[in-house]
Image 1 (cartoon, rainbow, N blue to C red):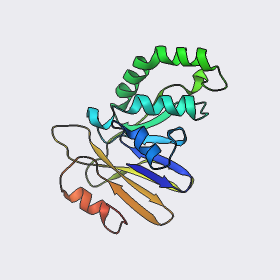
Image 2: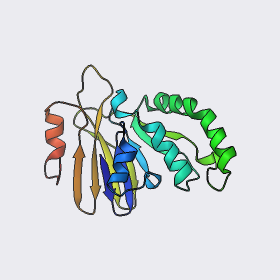
Image 3: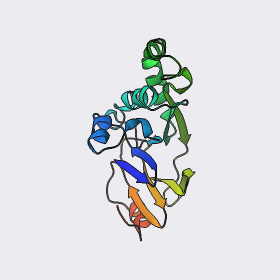
Length: 178
């Protein structure tokens, strides 16, 4: 799911073909400012490696791609960075610092504590965009969260994998898109 707020581009979850789907929609993966993970099932994160590599080697970025998620995201990011570590070296040696500086390789975890039911936690704020996380139930998967995006008086709630529940109803009241 791509979220565009002005000139900012984010995705929620990073499944297979995410980079290709962005391209089909006319967006360059190199311009992605961050990824928000709802939970850690493989079909929601298996495209992270490609998203990081394309951003780094094709987007003129000198810092790793931010990956926001509930606690545990650090382990996911560390695993991808370990798996791609040798590729970082090869691409830097092949393309050099002008195209693929080592400072921009990989992913950077941006963990937060999953809020209790009935509460939101601020996860990101910048350039008029505010992203808040809320608890969702994806039992037995834990943690699992959804995200509420607010930009210029418009709101969007992305729940991830969950069921109908009071917490989602509460935080979707008055929003523009669920």
